[in-house]
Image 1: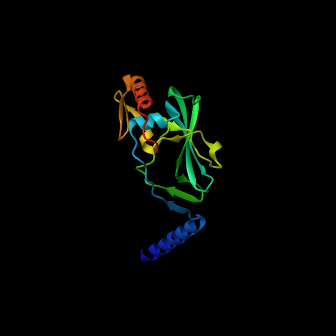
Image 2: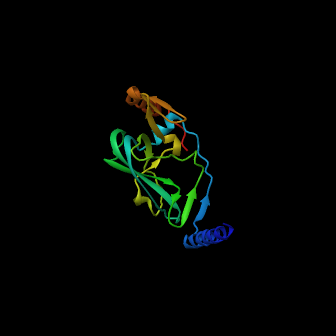
Image 3: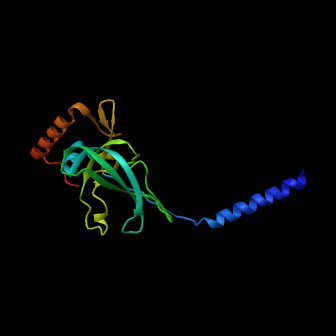
Length: 185
C-alpha cells in the first residue's frame, strides 16, 4: 500500500506545479477611497438623471489609466429626472481583467447584480477623462446614489424614500434646492 501512495502523491504534486505554471499571475491593485457624505438635497441637486431600471449586463474593461473598471448596463424603466435614454451604462472603478484585479473599499462602491431592480441618481460629469465616451454616467456619491426597491420603499443604507410618494418627495427637494441651494462640493 505504501508503494502506491508515493507515486500517486508525486503525480498529484507534479500536476499541481504544472497547473500553477500555466496560470499567469494577476497584478492586485487595492486602493482606498474617501467619499463625502451627501444629503438627499445634494443627491438630487448633483444628479443629471434619476432613473428606475433593471440591470441587464456588466463588463469589465481597462480605463484610461489601464486599471479595471466595471461598466453596468441598465434598462431604464422609469425616468424621474433628466433624459437618459432607454439604456444607460454606469461605470464603477474596480473589477478583474485577464491580468489585473482592482479592488477598493467594497463598502463605498455601488454593487450591481444581473436582473436587479434599482433606482439610481447619476451624473454625466466625467471631467476630462480620455475614456469619457466609453460610458454614460457615474453614480452620485458612489453607494449613496444607488437604491434598491423593497417593501414599498426605495432604500439604501443611508436614505429611504416612500416609493408611492417618490415623485412628490423629489419635487419637494427640488423646490427646497431652488430656495436654498445645497453647498457645492
